[in-house]
Image: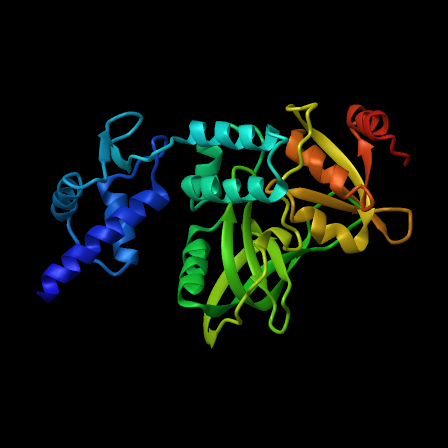
Length: 324
């Protein structure tokens, strides 16, 4: 009976793995499935996995096998990624919906497209241009964070902090922070880790690419009763009808204390340089000038001054009557 229960649990884990790590654009080979099962503590063979897949396909779940562009499996979903992206666009262009209704719909849809690594997002999402450089995200760190969230345990993060220099270089130093993990928030534009610091009721966010190491502690987390959408550094987007979709180098002038706030918005590498004005610095990044970026600038215009490109600076000056 114990072996039967173990086999049934393995089937559920296999379904979970395929939901998390596969879709129609990213299939998993038998070897990859076996590797993931190993991480969950199930030692199995290729033959057993194939038998499990056949058994699962006798249920309401459907696991599909393809040979191109590589041989592998994925689990069929009610919506494919392009459909989800189109639905998100429709939701955010519908002015009849309240902000809360849009956020609730986005939460449900993002759960459908939730993917474990930044590379998968780049490969499966039309919103992310392939020519934009992105910082790597550690799959191992994501697994550890997921485990900590599930087990409700605190973690100690080793993360990078920007150091300002006289040129647009990217010197960094590492710091350590013990936090209460809340959620990994993955969307077509961002891969964020949401957490609270001990003794604080306010949620904060950090780009996953900034996290270099994760250590799970034995301490239980402090209960979080807030809203992740209000977390410091979390930005869901603002409706901007005039869309700019090209990519370009952007130069921003910001306060020194806002350097981490700005860096935390981008998955792309951000370069910083000291500024002649006391208490200010420059941030340089190559990014897509889409509605999300423009909405972010607009929401935090009191913190950010656009230096370049001139076209973007003129757009804000004319559209929103901004003076810099």
